[in-house]
Structures are given as structure tokens and as C-alpha cells.
Amino acid sequence: MKRNLIVACSTLALALSASTVALAAEAAKTEETAKAPLYMAKCPSPCDFTVKSHDKDEVAAALKEHAKSHHKGMILSDADANAMIKEAGPKK
Image (cartoon, rainbow, N blue to C red):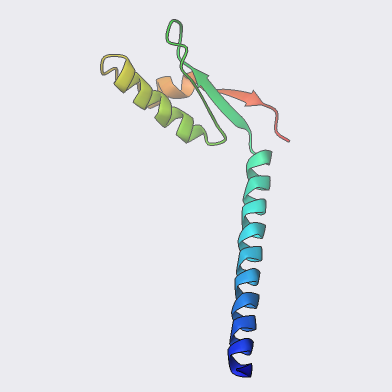
């Protein structure tokens, strides 16, 4: 019986320490993202599609996919997509 209690307590301690490490890693990632610049791009009127991200490449990819799927198969070049991207907010 004592052995089962020791095993249960050890398992609980291990689970709690693992969750604490996971929470600390998530907090560090959130802090990194908050310091990164925010990028955005808009599709011209009448479409008004808008995309925002801290990753400039992600914004460009979303623009290219949007153009292809919503504008009759339009192929948007990397240069054109990057020209549409603006920095939306100051670095913190």
C-alpha cells in the first residue's frame, strides 16, 4: 500500500512539473511574438480581404492563396505580394 502511495505521489509530481515546463515555454513564445513586428496586407476594393501576422512570409503566402482562389486563378508573384505588405504596428 505504501508503495502504491509513493508511485501515485511520484506520478503526480512528474505530471505537475511537466505542465509547469510547458506553460513556461508557451509564455516565452507569447513574449517573443509580442515583440515581433506585426505585418498586414489588404486586397483592393471591392474585395477588402485583410491578413495580419507577425510572420511576413505567412502574410505573403496568404495573399497569394487568396488571389488564386478568389480572383479567377490570379498568380501573384513574390515581389507583388511583398509590395502589398506593410508594417501594421510598432515593435514593442
